[in-house]
Image (cartoon, rainbow, N blue to C red):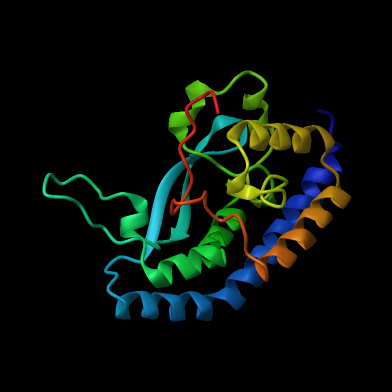
Length: 205
């Protein structure tokens, strides 16, 4: 991978400017969503989780919480599909739960476009080729998100992530952003069939 330094400088500039604009615009939306979550029985509204970022640096990812904290008699959390609420499913389906990640972009943990940040538990499962996905900042959206998202295999996702790392340009970023906006109005492949989210990566699928 060989990317000119101006690319990173300009991309970071746009990330800062548009994340600030996005946060200002999205704040009323987030407040409305939080109020609806409260009315529908949620008692916590934000989700914080450690993810892997640029060059495998760990950071805290921010999202709106679309699931309730419900456990069985032994204290074990119920499956995702039983904890997600009807309204939470709508929010997840529209990707509005991703809005707090604008703060991640502003802080420099993420960019608008890049491979999606995944769990730290997956680090030991990647092949050397798959680990190359961490050579760029993770993104709110990316090549895999516009080409099947959670309906495609982990292997295919990682192939797209590495392809993006090797072929990134301003034009590619712009195209991904436009297609992401188009898919916002036609949300598909948010989760795998018969699940509320996606099956975990086990190193082979």
